[in-house]
Image (cartoon, rainbow, N blue to C red; front, side, top):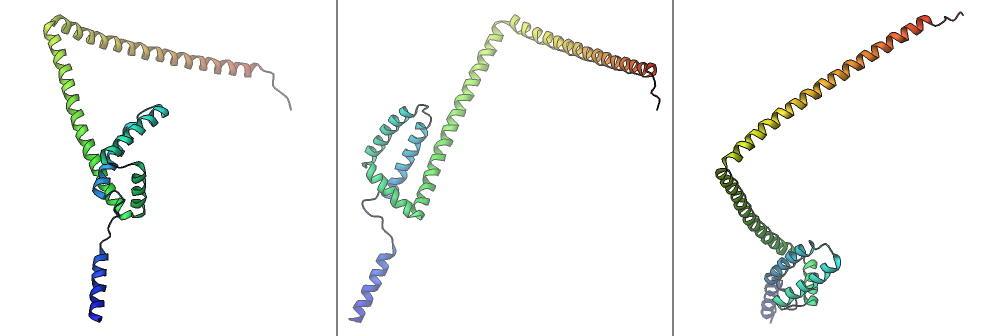
Length: 193
């Protein structure tokens, strides 16, 4: 009988080592996908400037996500409460969700960079073809650049000369004031103590 008790105890201990997630909770593989979709929806909703519209749009997005995974808001909230109580599980889940979101962002950034590069190439090609079609226009642009440089150089020279004259006048005025003060002092009656 003792052997039977020991065998039963060992069986219970071995079977109890692995923590199993309850069946009424969304399993980790599925909750990762749900959270990924939720965060994508939240990102879009946060770009909507009108709060009332954002609530309506958000509600429809969340319902679509629930329908996609065969859950509802009650099961989702219950599952999130369970995972918040089991921090070690939710930490791993969010690490995976974050990695998936970053991967998606990197993919989108690459696509946007390609599009931008193509647009810049198209603009350059359009400019080059316009230049080839009208060489007079190219010459006129070059002349206008040279003229703008001359004009800006002349403006700077005028500004420098104006400032120099202003400084000379200010020095001359202050010297004249000092001379007048010294004359007034000399002409003023001296006080006798």
